[in-house]
Amino acid sequence: MTNALKSMTVQTAREALRAAGLRSTTSRVAVLQHVASASKPLSHADVADVLVPEGYDKSTLYRCLVELADAGLLARLDAGDHAWRFELKGDDDEHGPEHPHFVCVDCGKVTCLQDVEVKITPPKKAAAMGAVTEVVLKGHCKECQ
Ligand SMILES: [Zn+2]
Ligand SMILES: [Zn+2]
Image (tube, rainbow, N blue to C red; front, side, top):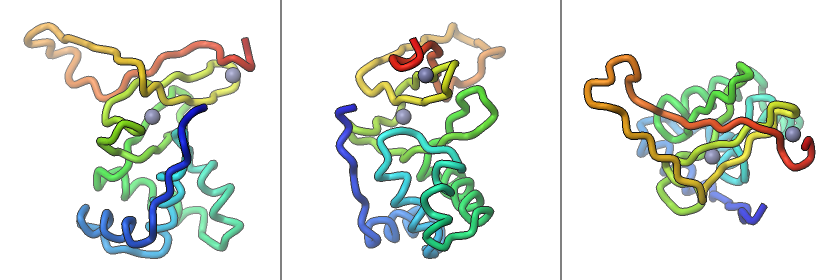
């Protein structure tokens, strides 16, 4: 992994929340900061593992993730195992707005594929397809291969 851990200051997190129309609460700031510093999409369990020991409430954390995703601050990813993963929705190089993800079918590890571009050109009037919101590639990760 070459992704450098990015840190988001409390100030930046608050501003992002306000810009998205959300009140800045300590839980929301903590969740946003935590997801922003991660190099891969995080599930609710991943976030809870770190923030519950710090005194945050597990169900509040889940609500925060959903609220942040609904407000457009986080991208929600369904890796196919019925557990949502969340990642920062940004427009910089590190977290491009639309990048595919690789999911290991053995261990469930999700990796961001920033350097891979998958272009889908839907045929005109592809009513059955609707809008493509995410691309998930599945396979076996290096450790499981
Ligand atoms: Zn694996
Ligand atoms: Zn990603």
